[in-house]
Image (cartoon, rainbow, N blue to C red):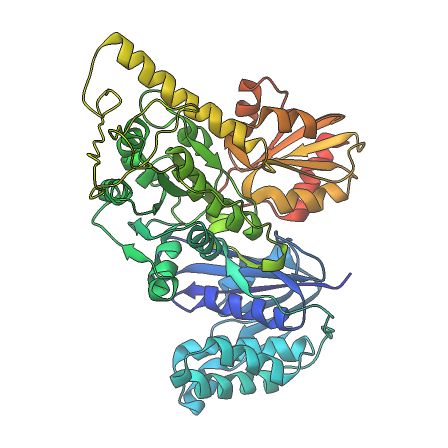
Length: 552
């Protein structure tokens, strides 16, 4: 199988993420499916940033430890990654910043000075050298630069890239594949596009890694996508503004991470009691408190499942790749409005900021869902007790409708009440909505399975660990089962997927086995845990080694 891995490393502020996406684009132009993992500390400048770009002839969504080419802007990028350098690894380094006896040393400072180019164009020198080492035609990398570099800087980048190309030599040849070139997008970008497909009209957010880039992406594209993007002063304002927009009839979504979601929990309860739909993109990162702001974790599952006081239904989904992020982001927004419940899209840094080849043709179109609207007859009762628990919606300004919403216990018209009968009926109405949502989800692919049913070993995982598990499982002939919907939990679909499961292993990016805990609460055996909780996702080979210890 044709497969290549490239690591590019340097300091914050040197454009490592952008350079990594350009390298992914280079392989994509040749028909390869790509994945990029980006690792960086919470620093504006300095520190050590790196990206691992993996290209394969098959669909992938995880990285491996060893690399074929290491592109080093400084000495740390060589010293910190010795375990990735194998006998066949080619090192290309900035000779003005690093020392390496083998490989290709590029005089990047001199090249930039002679070409009268900005310092950031050093990335293009590395891209050109990589193309030469990999036997990729000059025209291919120049095409990538033309597609990604602003016009006013294009010529300088092309000149520097040619110097880098000429300074290296061919080591191996990346043969073009007969596959279409796919765009390389991040999880944040595709989540945003999915929300727009689902009917998004306003996106409200305060920047918080790893969901910040979703805010930036939608803000840049707001006019093209015909949406409003609003940046209030804090996360409390974010959730309340979104609820106000939804009360007025506008489909709104918000984005945050664990710390911001903490501040939103009172607003989440308000959404539950007032039955105002809102969709929340919750990008996980390590905690508690500030934790590690720029690293990854799957440690907020039970926080999301139980956030807010009182008992009210919610929809929680955890996509594992871009195609799922697109479909389920749209679905979450539509179901939120259909059932007037909060919907939470649970991502993490790995998925949100990772770069993947995105094949829109592989996307399962979301089922179209429309909210239940008032037909205009009779007295409007915002909380009318209809069959299924869903009350018809009307919005302020609608003739003949007084639209009252209430955070207090209320009757059908929205007036505050504390009578035992009204409070009992109100609680039963909210729970009935949850049951209606659960019944609807029975028609959706809420659980996915990969590999043979009779494998004898089943690996359970959720979210972004999906693709590392799929690849590692192949080495053991094991099956992988992935729940997409986590609330309301799809009990029947899970039972069906786990028939003949045999030995079960539960892989998670947290310290306590949060999916395992949820499975036990639902009456299922989660098997043996394989956990990683250092802020990094599993590499495929790393996970395979850990599974070997458990399965053997």
